[in-house]
Image 1: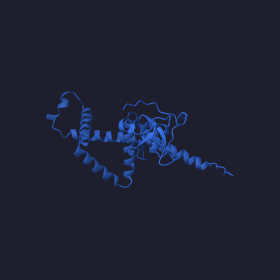
Image 2: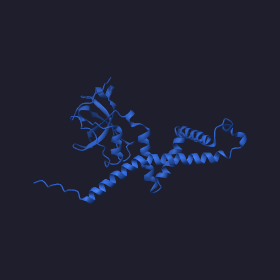
Image 3: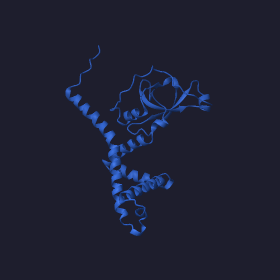
Image 4: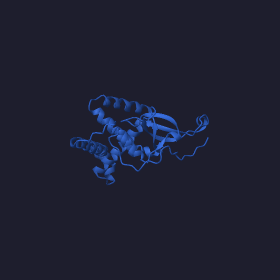
Length: 229
């Protein structure tokens, strides 16, 4: 005898509606608000800092560029210089140290971590790195995990296996930038008709956000790839 599933109460429907839409709104607005706030703060600082420069050294004013324009140019220079700094060895150490300090601050650490992952998922364009979203049975039989196909195994690895093997990345939740690299037989993957961006939304929200997608293609359908030894 199978137990009949309990119907959700009105209050449970309301809570689900509020939770899903609250998270969806946060995921959409957080990067925008943070970006606007940072740029606004930088522009204000740049405009005020520009006033400390002697008139004789304000070359841009002689070119007819207003103070607001000089602030934008200064912010542009600061961002480029910061990017240059954090991409070298010493800069990476400084960036990691600052990040560790922020992550130790209660309350702020969670907001920073969530916002940081959102920016990474938006600006690093995961669609260019990941070719396809698939389901694989992981970490055991009949447990499924979202994974991204990064390519097809070639050379020695492919020669030593009996079937065609795909390189897949299994991300963690809620930080999808870390995870596990696995080599999975192509026939053991289930191709999904959802975009990489939608898969990231599912992962970051821990499954709360589940964008609607077309019907899945037939189970165990192979992924069309080309390989070369």
